[in-house]
Picture 1 (cartoon, rainbow, N blue to C red):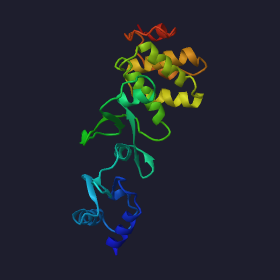
Picture 2: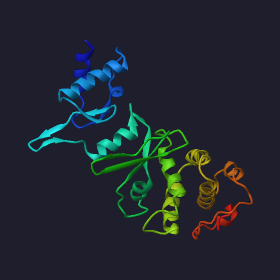
Picture 3: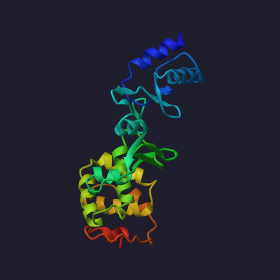
Picture 4: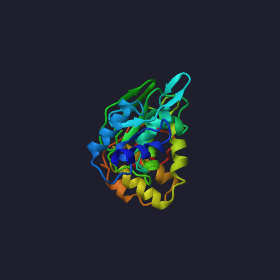
Length: 238
């Protein structure tokens, strides 16, 4: 019986883990039927609805039912069926990268496609569209490129300090990784590609930069006000 199968699968899900009907490994039964069963469990108080299409088993304490932790909520936007579908970006990324000490009150997540902002209690989540396909193999490179993209907006620091930190991360990447990083950068603005080119040329001159260089207009200049890159003039960075 489908309802019994669903109940058994829900039983093994840890309390306060947010899940959707797609996370249930049920081969038989249509999606609407599974959703109806989950909604009936909500009506009986066995489940709580986190948002449309997402549920959780509340942890019950003497003080009442506790909602999922913020990290559990965020995780639902980063992973799906064991695959990476999103990544932390924006000000929270700058904090994680050691580029700033300011703690943001908004969590920004890079995803493929578009999604409306979400507010749950004190948690504010907004989404930014990533043009490259997101997967576990490239997500760390996308984070580096996002930091270069917003190099002027990182709070409580200077552009030069940020460039030094990012350069130290980039110069430790092997040549195959640099090739992937360059390929991913083609979906970013020209100033991001110029910055990446200057950093790689300064710290990893053996890397092939021909694709990156040919993607840029040779007469366009980029006013970034960085001083620590000796190669910046080769990439028209002012």
